[in-house]
Amino acid sequence: MPSGFFGTYTPRMDDKGRVTLPARYRDQFAAGVMVVRGQDHCLYVFTPDGFNTFADAAINAPITDERARGYQRYMLANTDEQRPDGQGRISIPARMREYAGLTKDIVITGVGLRMEIWDATEWQEYEARQEAAYAAPERGLLTS
Image: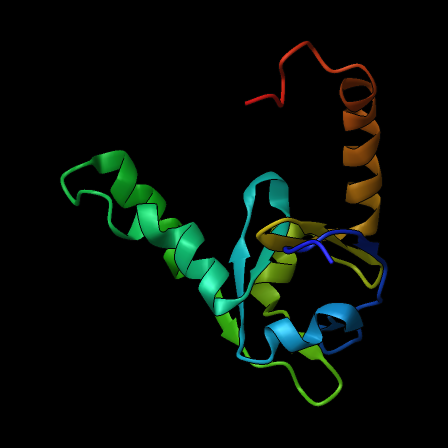
C-alpha cells in the first residue's frame, strides 16, 4: 500500500462540529491529530509526526525575519491538537469552521503528508478550476 494519505471522502459534520476521519487512516491518527488553517481556506489535518515535518521550517525560521514571524504566529496560533474519540471523530473548533466556511457537507481529501477538510461546495469549485490544468499540464510541471 502506498504511504501517505490519498483519496476523497465525504463524511458529514454533525451539529457539534464533529467530523469522522476516514476509517482506513484511523490507526495513523491514534496518537493524535493536528488541525491547521491551510491555504485556500481549507483545513490541514496531520499526524503529530507529519505536523512536525510540515512545521519544522516555520518553527525554526529566524526570529529576525518579519515575514517568518508573521507566518509562525498565524500558523501556530491557529493549530489545534485533537484526540479522535472511539468512533474516529475529531471536533473542529468554531474558529476553524468559520475560516474554512464549513457546513454539514464536507470533503476530506488525502494530499500525501496531510489530509485536507473542505466545504463540499468549495471543493467542487476548486476541483473544477484545477481540472483543465491537470488534464493538460505544461511540459515539466511535476518532473524532477
